[in-house]
Length: 105
Image 1 (cartoon, rainbow, N blue to C red):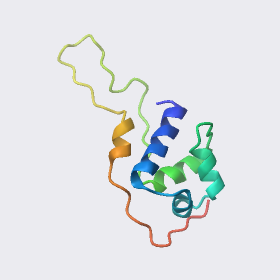
Image 2: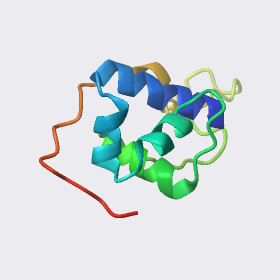
Image 3: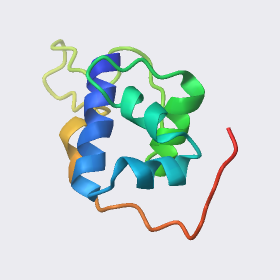
Image 4: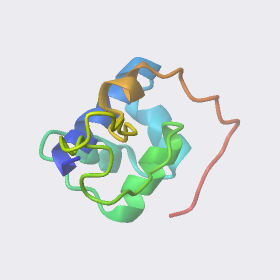
């Protein structure tokens, strides 16, 4: 997944959950400006901001070796494990509300 795909996926999740920038900022402990910049098309969030956004959206970041889950084409019986969630993340249910949860970055 590219950086742009990740940002697009996070923005889609925000939209699907119906969360405002202010709500995400409150949940993540980031400023509204940081959230807006991170989720923009030119976004380039720092790792700490990215992790805070992922958590605020009710997601977790997982790492896998490059190419994991892709078909090798050599074994017709091979069934890859899907690792790319893309559109499915945006369709997942909204995260639970956080009662005055404020994180310090």
